[in-house]
Every structure is written in structure tokens, then in C-alpha cells.
Length: 452
Image (cartoon, rainbow, N blue to C red):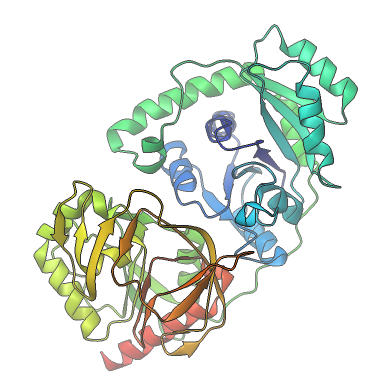
């Protein structure tokens, strides 16, 4: 498959790559291009933003969760019917596992997918010094994959001179600049909680930025670079589909909104029929369910509304106690507790399927990649499961079924409540990292259907 593609990278977080990547995506959409976007790393929010505000298909690429062949296969699968792919990097270009490795970095994804990278360099306060700065990124690894640079926060008058200096000194092409743009930024609340009444203004701002980028970027050079990417030959291994579909209730509303779309697609391919419902707005679970999924999100912001929906809380507790197979992660796991502290500091009654309370911490409790091991899921040995955690809340009762280990570290802890019918804990799961887990879940759902 010939797939034109580029990766937008930066020297560090906070360099403006999310805003500028969104501007480029909007620019391509305005040109009538059928683009698909990808985000490096374990990120729910940027893909959700790309889909909701820009209206563009967006997925994740993570070289910690999957091997090279699977990563390339996912890129190929998710780019079907697209003219090109734009990949947004994560953190600094070479920043990867444990802060001491380039594994699972944007550089690692660029290499694994043979995607040419464009380095976004913030030029505020720099002129000639930009040259050794870029030179370091080009030479740090034997193959940096960096083929172009974009100068951020640079004046139009300075760009021709900067372009000439850099291209004469370094084997890289300057592909434009981004001037200082006032009143056009993405705040953390936009990337996390985009309300319907905000979307119109955000779209207007992104369209304004896209018009600026049409003038300041060398768009044709970017498209030419994207076309230089080699074909992707790898195919994803197809999963056997179950003889009969199983109905899985999928909690999906403003409180539960963190999904890896690849997870949902894989479940459907395996034979799941996903039935969305809202723990906030619906009074009961959908009828005739064979399984239940509660994902992450922002339950602490809607603790009062979740608690007031007593019929749903009771329905979910009874269903789990009666053996309905259930996967719950992070926010969904919090909801299953007896009580949860809301954002306002008050404690609210929750479903009560997991004993104990959830409380807010002052800082991130556990953050980053982990590998789960030494446990069973739905009664089956499944081996190691690459996962990740990111939460400010903690539980009195995180579970003991699995050992979580930080990569390149001696740190570990026990977590996960696991039984023949329940898998619940803080870790977020990416099913292509270990397909045995979703398969075990669906097999248990099939058993439930036979009983029902």
C-alpha cells in the first residue's frame, strides 16, 4: 500500500506541535484531502479532539504496546481510503520509556513505520543558534528520520534568512514557519473536555490558523516529502470470528469517554455487538447483555449525577454480582467502588461492586507504561499485558490479581481485581498488545449468552 505520510515532531512538550498539527490537518481538510491522523503514544485526548472538532479519523501508534509488524499493519488498516497520514509526535522527539530510553518515542514510531519526520523548532530568542540546535537532533541517532524543519514563532522577515542559513549548513529542508498567532491556542480543557458550544469557536480558530499556515508553510514541500515514504506491505493478522455475536454494553457518555477505537474495532471483528449506554442518563442497562465494559473518562466531574442515578448503579451492581462478564478500567473501575470523592471534595455513592472508596490525590498517583503479569483474566492464563496508567485518584482497594512492573525500573506493585467474570483496575488496556485478553472476555460472554 502506497501511503504518503509525515510525522510532526518537536524537541519537547509544550513546543506547539498539537496546535500546529491540528492546523495542518485543518488545512489539508480545507484543500479537500482525505487525511487520517495518528498520535504517538498512549493518548486518548488528541485523537478524540481530532475526531470531534476537525472531523477526521484519528488513531494511536504505540511501539510499546505492539511490535513493528503490528504497528505497521495498524497504520495500513486505519489509512485505507486516505490520501495521506499525519502523525503527531509525543513529548520530545527522542523521549521514550522511563525517561532514559528512546524506545516508544516519536523517533521509534518514525523508524518503525518508515515515516519522514518534520521537526518543529521554537525560534523565540534564537537565530544562528538554531543551526547547532537542529544539528544535534539530526546527529543524535544514526538515522534521525528528520527530513524537514518548521520554524515556530518566527517573523516573516526573518524566515528567508533562517531558511538559507539552515539549508546551507545542514542536510535538511526548511518547510516554512509559523508566525506569532494571538488568541489561537488549545487549552488543556479543550483537549480534555470539549463542550458542544465550544466546538464552533474552536473550528473557527483552527480555520483561521489553517489560512495562516497556507501562507507561511511550504505545503507542497510537505506533500512531496510525504510522498517519499515507502509502501507499507504488512497486514494485520485476522482474528477468528465467533460463531454467534455477543452483546456488550459499552458505557459511553461525558463521564466515560476514553476509548482506543482500535480496541472497539477488534472486538467487533471478533464478534462483539457493542451497545452504547449512559450511566448518567439511562435508568437501566440495555436488555439482553452478555457482557459489560466501563472505560475511563471523567467520572469525578459527574460524581453527583452518577450517584443520583440509583437505578443504574443498582442495576450494574446486581448484574456484576450475578456473573455478567465485565471489564472496567480507570474511571470505570472508580465507578464500581462503594464511594468516590468528586471534584468538589464530597464523597458520593457509586455502584458498590468493588469494596472501598476512591479519593483524590494532589498529584499523579501512577503514571506511564507498565507490564501486567502473574495473573489470570476471566479464568485464563494470558501472559504479559502491556498497559499504562494515568490518574490523580487512588483507591483503598486496587486489587492483587496482577503484578504491574514499570519498564527499565525496579518499581512494581500489585493491582487488578480479577475473577472468572470480572477484570477491573486502573490500568488502561490496548488489545493489540495482547489479544488473548479480549478473546478471553468474549469467550466468557459467549458462555453467559448460552446460560441466558
